[in-house]
Amino acid sequence: MPFTRRTAALALAAVLGGLASVAAPGSAGAAPRPGPETPSVLLLTVDGGADVRATVLVCGPAGGLHPDPVAACRLVARVDGDLDALDVDADPCTTVHAPVVARAVGVWQDRPVHYTHTFGNRCLLTRATAALFTF
View 1 (cartoon, one colour):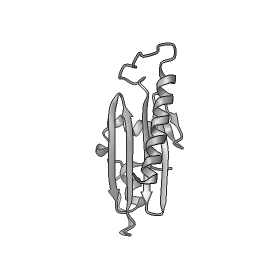
View 2: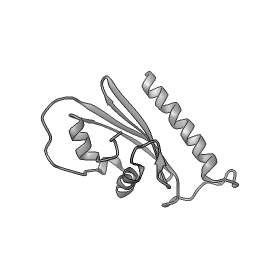
View 3: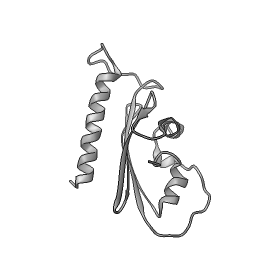
View 4: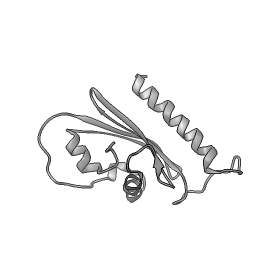
């Protein structure tokens, strides 16, 4: 497993483990019910070749390490965790070919999320996902 993926997996495991202990204080073993109050955690990465970035988005309540967790959580909630359904802005971008790969892995409302999409450049990434992968 490449270093970046292994590090991301370990970070997500640590966040999910920590979230489980915080999500239901005093109710050991009780699972939260799905709904707006259910904690959701996504590990987001953007791989632009030499430039690889990662952050953690927590929703329900909004937080984590993402610079704008409220806007990002609203975007994910709007598509109910189906990131393939995101289509924010259809304005044109330059035709510069500088591929970036956006990935999200985690849990949304007790459902697993696995998202990987390659965009032709950062402009296309931002147009399609708005604030979600802007970090």
